[in-house]
Length: 614
Image (cartoon, rainbow, N blue to C red; front, side, top):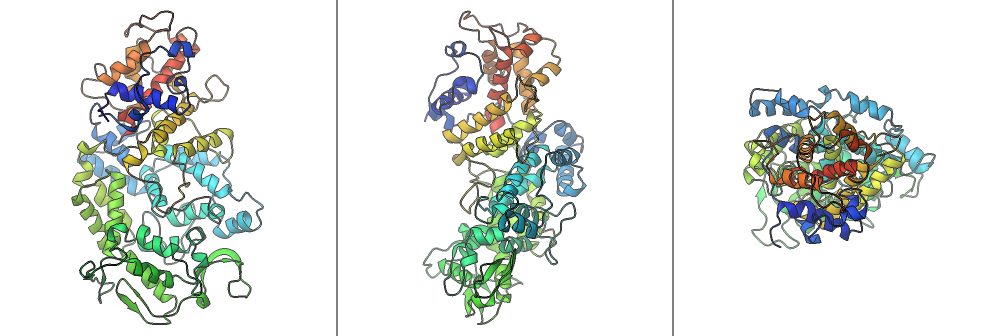
């Protein structure tokens, strides 16, 4: 495919790909009558262009790079607040990382106010309450807990000042991925999010011995909490894993995805030399550095009898129906076992399962796997091995510490590799990131609620993008590689989602979800011209400008040209520096439809490499 110019990326890719998806050009560019749009020379090209990203104008300032990498992009005064944290970039980053890691010290009053007024009802229900009300009695909606946490994911990501916490919640939900609408997952989803992924807040707590089992704490504790939750037990079929009829699904994924990872797979039939014996203080007798299929089948035997109280009476006697985890000895394979070269004698009981979890969590291969995933998420698709090694070492050395994961993030975020802004732009934002960062950049006013029309529309649009929260069916989580998300269908539907957000409620009594008209009016520009509007909205959305400003850059030129294009009955362009009456922008009157044109300008900036990449 030939290299695409910026003009082709902005207009050819955007307009022709949208046309191919069945949407009119006006739905992404502007809503002027088709006769006024059809002859605009901005809409040529082929759908293949939608699969490519052009080179950005310049690398953003350090503050912008950090806020894009550690969260969902800047909002409001975030850039100024970051720059006020120290006298140089290193000092500011150090202060910001510590601030974000100390998440409980960050006041989140706006988010809390929005949640309090949104009508969420499941957030404080215990696991047993969720199970009884939403699964057993069904006095409340079966899918209500899932629906609430899905919508809350947007609300938190957009409005929380604890941006690192929200970014990490998204990461760990994908690491321990469960399809949210899976049987028994949906009615307990509030608990899965609160009691496994996130650190305790508002009086919630962890069981004794697992106080640090969360995304800011200790991985070993978090792993066991995930293993005992009914959402995981059911999703990966361990509820039917018994000695008489074993099931390997969970055993395979706990090794291949949750701990050692496929990077430490020696193959189905390893040959001499493929596997090496190593040791550590946890298992001084030694263990294998890699796993094979034989280890998966042995892990399956360890996990027999690891179950949920769901009233099924697997042993023929009465069983409680509470949704709580329990171990059923009669279903457990009591024979001797060998995992990763470590031997367990027969009839070891449940202690051998806990020791298996120790072996997996404390294995250096697990440190390597999670370090690679974290570096890929925060930095780029092929992170430097030097960074992976540093993050791996911290994760491994701190494996018994209550703040193991916090130490791990600190190593990554304060590394020279993270500070290197030259790698900016190598990651393409996934659809969830694009939508959230657009709402943040444009001062969106959208309290996503459990059950209202606009919130339902949002989930509908997100499902079309391919990244509706908690809807990835496979246990591997949403892909984190650029190549997956730069395909035409995902880009098109992501842009369509932004199109809807920019236009929703315009001309109605309800507030605009993205107050483009209000922001434009409040800008109080000396003159509202194609040039000044393009410059203003580039600054407003991107929160930075290159040395010398945006005017004179190719990107600004294309956007200004878009604003200057005249209706069909007058083909001469509106001069780039000729004033537009401000009242016409508010009225959207014939023949220029300036309001729609400004909204089209905003949509185009959302589609630029400067916004889509991080």
